[in-house]
Amino acid sequence: MYAVVETSGRQYRVVEGEVVYTELQRGYNPGDEIVFDKVLLVRKDGEVLVGKPYVEGAKVSGVVVEHVRGPKLITIKFRPRKNSRKKIGHRQWYTAVKIEKIEA
Image 1 (tube, one colour):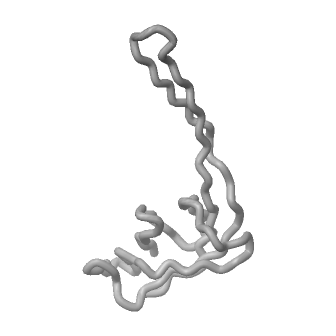
Image 2 (image 1 turned 45 degrees about the horizontal axis):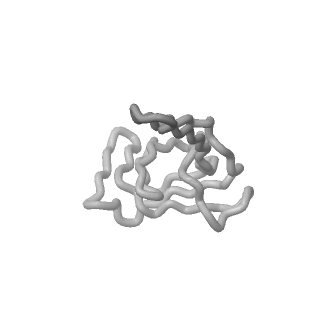
């Protein structure tokens, strides 16, 4: 059984028992329960439920494990002029969510 949920403008394929790294979920602390109610698709027992745009009555619940930062990404901007270089680093915040239950 798996589902496709939408959160923070992105879509994630989730399975019960796995840990999913989503965009930072503000307002949640580690150990808090989180519910995703924007479920786009659910597949269980060979049956596929597709929403238009969301599956009615379906929800996915999980527990926030931690907030982590991703790897450092380096961006270099270079233009062919004298002293025209810029180097920027960025690390994105993510929230690790352990999927507990998929209801359809």
